[in-house]
Image (cartoon, rainbow, N blue to C red; front, side):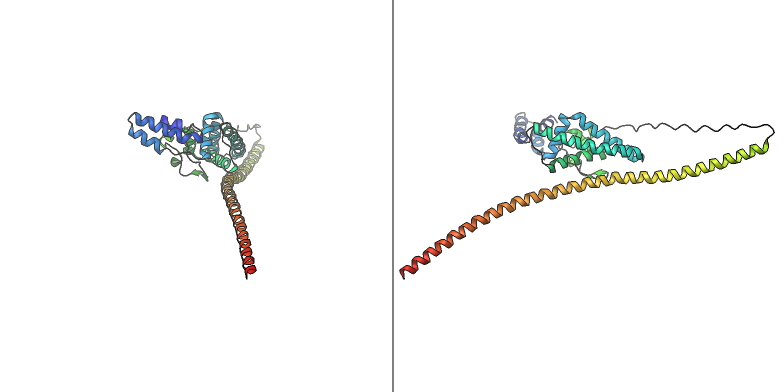
Length: 295
């Protein structure tokens, strides 16, 4: 709906006031259903807001990420090893570049991003690269929380979008690229020497042996190539696991930071109490001294 599209285009500090205004406008129009829908729209967390801003302010870069994700899925499905390596490198470079751009976009809009938020932005972009529905969710520009891939799937996509029905309308289906058929190797031409049957038979035997050796060599090569491609596919999976571990590390680091803040507050409170104890002790000492002088 138009109200949601407008709300998820605002800055974080504008979201709640503008939601209240839109609900009031809908109430003035007598549309109770719309009022309820607007009030239910949740404020996006910072990482989700950042991705929404990228979709609006850097649509070309976001589309590059999503297009590369589609190509990666195609390459993985067809076990195209060389393509997997090339696209895997592009994926890491592009996601990092867009994440750096996210900092600039957010700063221009008055929002400074910490490393944990940037990590969540990278995870959301990665999720959109491995899953069609996640890509469609990102395209809506109405994320309320970041996405995180689990291998080659992304859970909770619909719950991450303010208006889940918007996802279906944004799914882009691409026909698989048509493969170019390899030309069959040309058959060797044999020159037959008239009345030289023995030489012909010897040449035919040599050809059969050479073709047999070629077939065996090709089978060995294909077997080795399959192993390489499996390792390359495993490498891509491991990169996804590394990304997940980095996300979890960022969460733990955030918890460490929070605990350090709480520890600092606790130490400050303890020092205050220590001063109070010292003052009370001094008062007791003075009272005892006064009492002693009276006796």
